[in-house]
Length: 75
Image 1 (cartoon, one colour):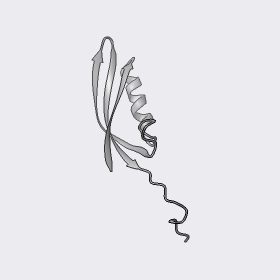
Image 2: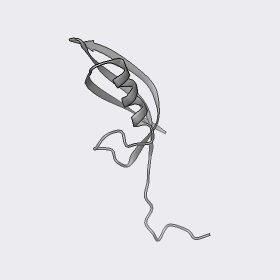
Image 3: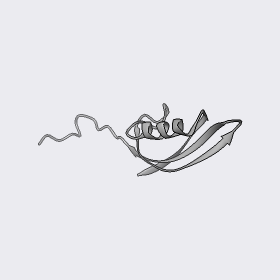
């Protein structure tokens, strides 16, 4: 397993941060890392900013490696 840090900006409230956190599980962490899947949130830090919230997540990810057809075995 590997880890990544992800940041989100301008959440209106803490429930929005919880929704972001739950929505990450089982999905790619961002558009630049589509070959990874978030397996769990390890830690997060909330930063109040001008009446809104920024958050940084430390997530555990698993790389989804696609094997060519000639590598796959039939059982």
